[in-house]
Length: 356
Ligand code: KG4
Ligand code: ZN
Image 1: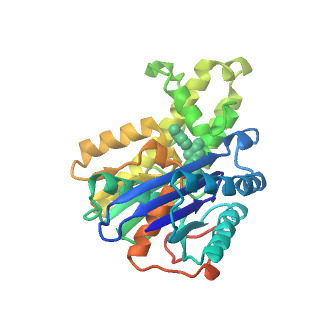
Image 2 (image 1 turned 60 degrees about the horizontal axis):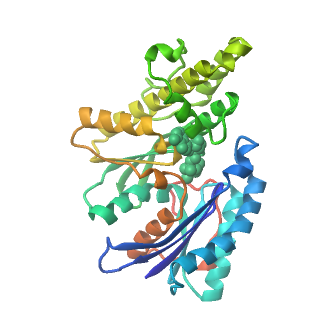
Image 3 (image 1 turned 90 degrees about the horizontal axis):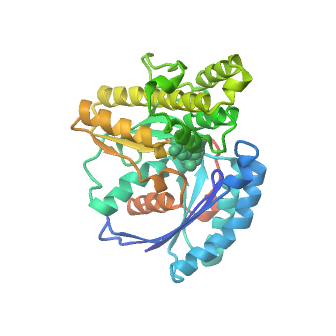
């Protein structure tokens, strides 16, 4: 079967086409997987500006769809999958309306997909394509860390999710982005901070900057990153202008910001893994593209929890893409989740714990 998927929940316009074999479950062929990034548009605002994002999606989506079809050699589509939430409402509507019009025109079924669930599937399913190991991974702990979300989720089985904890204010990626902006770095802040932090060779170069690790010792699985951002701001304001602008200060602040975020994420995730005695850790969302985070998660897990499997998406799949939407739709399809295009709507605050 051929699945077309559409993802427009934030600032990336994404379209994918996959061919899936209903009998050989793990055989998924990626026919096309296109992403049109809007980073340049939002760079001057230091964050995603929903109105502009919506306009860019409207412009890009028909073009991307045409290109994907051409790349896939014009296959006969059997199913349309589209992200319906969570995300920016005006942006989500662009994808949903496009999917609905197409479903109506081609008389095709349409499957609404939760963006967070799609992130969960990215590595799990992509690994399954490579290694064919879809089963025996549950229960699992899933950590999503992106620009809009920071959640620790217990996955008991496919479709059985419980949010153990989440951020009470800013998402981890948002914290990277805001501190990056404060330091005058390019948007998005995450990769820019990673680049600056990597330049520090010696711990002494850290200029004694010490930021808090918010909520790290609290006996819950919640996070808070706005305090970290404020502490960084106080430190920044307390410095002389010539120090603030120096490359030594910027690099030191980036290294400490990155480490503070990694420490909290790692500590809380490993505690959840122990408390719930799970078999697997799955990491997803844009922040998991961070090399220091990946290295430290892998290292700590290998040392402290050698029997736990850790699924980390390839960097190209950590950020938003439509392949993850297509693969999630395929697994719903196998399990008989079918919906009529007329019922499909948008929910900007859609929770992973609830049915769409
Ligand atoms: O998942 P994503 O592409 O979009 C959503 O927010 O859904 O995540 C984007 C976030 C941004 O905040 C960006 O700064 C962060 O992921 N990010 C990173 C890195 N690459 C992207 N954060 C830290 N290190 C990175 N290498
Ligand atoms: Zn995302």
